[in-house]
Amino acid sequence: MTARAKDWRARLDAYLDGCNGRPFQWGALDCALFAAGAVQAMTGEDFAASFRGEYADAAGAEAAIQAAGFSSMAEIAAAHLSEIPVAEARMGDLACVDMPGHGPCLAVVGGPHIICMTLRGKGALPLTRANRAFRVG
Image 1 (cartoon, rainbow, N blue to C red):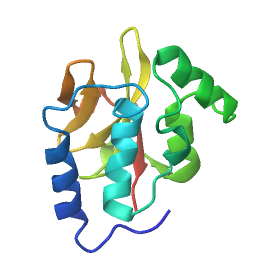
Image 2: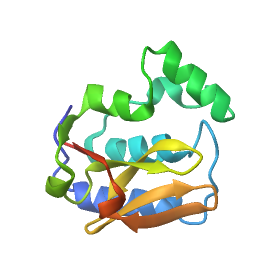
Image 3: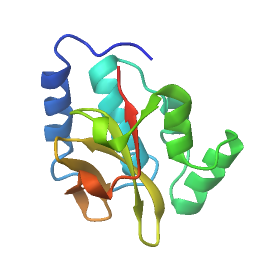
């Protein structure tokens, strides 16, 4: 994975601001593609490029992930990013949280909380809800 750009924080802030008011959309702005978009904003690399626009619902997302040889989007993140203890996650890293009825979801670490896409749009949860974390850059 490429290192974070020198202006990664401004890029991340601009990306997150650009997601304000945008609805959750499978294959465009779901939890995994939201997190991958943050990585792309900070590094220029999109580890989820092959998934964008390739599915339109949860079943399609699961099929695309399995067709790529993975069990979850968190496993795809683990294939591209170094896994770290959640306690070591810092601003801009990715975190994984289990969402009731949905399974593992990727989110962006925003300090003591994680920023995630929910069915109602962008939201936040305490970092303590994360069960995995991945270093970006």
